[in-house]
Image (cartoon, rainbow, N blue to C red; front, top):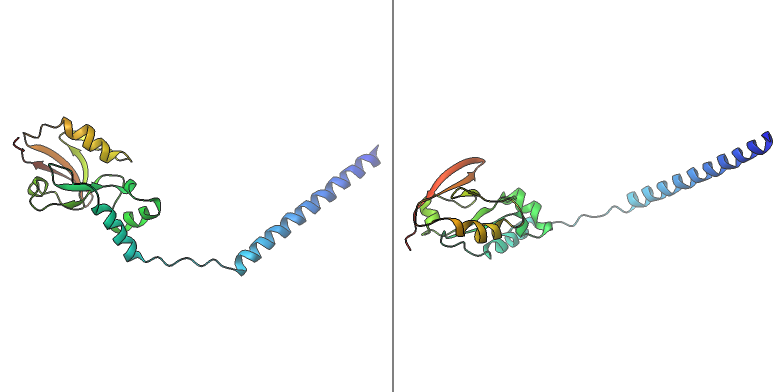
Length: 168
């Protein structure tokens, strides 16, 4: 009985050693092939990518009657999001990416780069649907015949501005 047990144990031990040797050989082969042929990273033309992002942002519709265009990181393809975040400050919040000089938003003191937090007491969401929610759900609830308070983040600080009343 002991000899059967010992023999079985020796066979399992030998099979395990062979498996470990095989796995080690595979790992060494993978490491050698990976280090022998290093992958070249494609050089990114950052200026061209930023121009592409800015063109995409410029194609956004003007939010009337305010006279500004907004966007957030979710409006861009995934491969553009990191550069838009690092170089243009775009994040999950809706950010003013363009503002008409003669608009009520400009007269109220809004600036390109301001991140929208609240309009007329209504919180602006920070998600993929932020633009749709603002335009279709939030703005229709605001009485624009009265001055409207707007809260923005500017350079990381909260700023309260007042949009003038719009006469209908």
